[in-house]
Image 1 (spheres, rainbow, N blue to C red):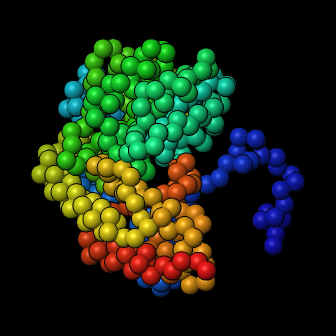
Image 2: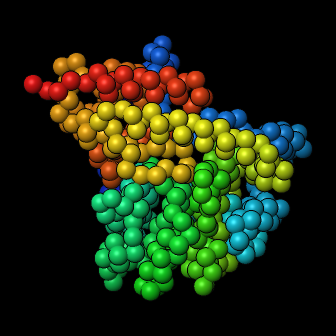
Image 3: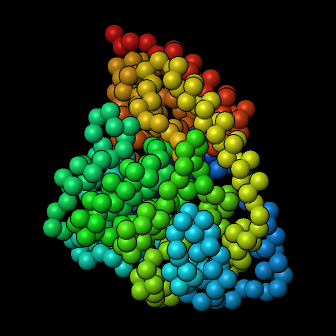
Length: 410
Ligand SMILES: Cc1ncc(COP(=O)(O)O)c(C=O)c1O
């Protein structure tokens, strides 16, 4: 092996990067894809994206952008017409954003990173309701903040309550991070539940970062945007979103943050010094998606995912040892408690954790799911139901057969 592969003596990594693990969900997804590429018939239920194609108007707008040679730097906050389109798009939920409130970024992930960068002083605490999306604590730490997990109570359906939040607040608490619909649990907070959480943030003068990337993917319930709750909430809220999930455009890397204008200006300044701006072609694609009438197509897609969600819930409910302690009405995940399988064996191996469950489900039944430890829920697994219906049905059959075939350890 060359020194470039093994020698770590000449370059010292900064503390903030030295122990930073890569995204656990991305690693699992990559592992499942590798097995599939090597010919194993794995059904991959780890994915965090809908398995639809990019909506057509976006693709067409991108082709036109290339043909017009729209391939130069854009303004740091994004092309003006896209900022207008994003604000109009957000306001369908009852907010009152203008173009000056919007900064277009390379995905919602980068928007979150910028948000923490402009808000946090070293040691500032960020309340993160658990279970949470894997990247949040790392993003907070990278920006010099301190992630503080807020765990839901028993029998809460994995939703946090105002009391739980209040108990976690210290003089160093600066930000409340909300994610609705939630990854990984798939739960959707009602507007009353959100209002009660927001009241706690107002009482303690916290800034709210509201990650609403899955706002389109809600079923059998209404969606509420935090910044639309009134009572001055928008003035203390940064709303995060993007085209990735709604329009099946994860690879185009277009997201946004919408915030009071001075905050948006600070974020734009950071972007100007780091990324310059998001891709010009992708911005045109996003503009194509946001300005076309896609309501029919998006409704059709939502109905398809809703169908798969119901099928998944039904199958998991019937599987021995697997319990659903949430009401998953959002995103594209069912988060299942598998602690009922602990002490059971598959072949000669015993399940003692959700990680064991996921590893054995992959090796014995060729189904990949994400164990919950990195989401701060070590007894759960996240099951993504975005794969096509026939593959999902096959995966659910395999899970049922796996669960039924487990035997008590001697
Ligand atoms: C809760 C949540 N927020 C943000 C993101 C990032 O979205 P984007 O692909 O637009 O960066 C994801 C993607 O998995 C997510 O699940």
